Image (cartoon, rainbow, N blue to C red; front, side, top):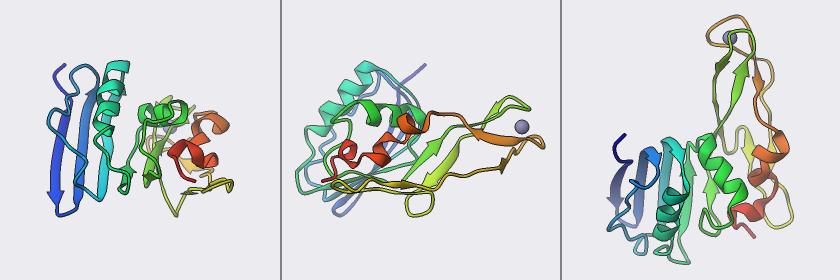
Length: 171
Ligand SMILES: [Zn+2]
């Protein structure tokens, strides 16, 4: 179904990447070099799925990441959060997740409605041995019926990277 789109924008020492589509064998970060940038902001909001070859392409891009830089991750969908939670090195050291989608489900109309959690609002990242914090949203009304949305993930698994800062390489 075509290649993943990688939109690249440079602004001085900041690099903005916007990824869209499936992160798979067609995910080519070809000539990208993260080395020169102090800050790299990646918007994962349009990523629909991830497979092992896509992960390999991504981690090979990360080898160009230079030590003193900082990566921030925006609008991470479930497929990206699942990787962060299980794969050490999916993000460079001291990465900051600014926002990510949390799967919610309406039993009444059987619809999935991911909710965007933002850093400083619905969660705080921890550091060192201090775990992060999550402010769960309860009784969120369904946007399609008069039902109520329920959290559709296992908290200790899905929010692992928030609770255990070492997964983001934060020390
Ligand atoms: Zn509903």
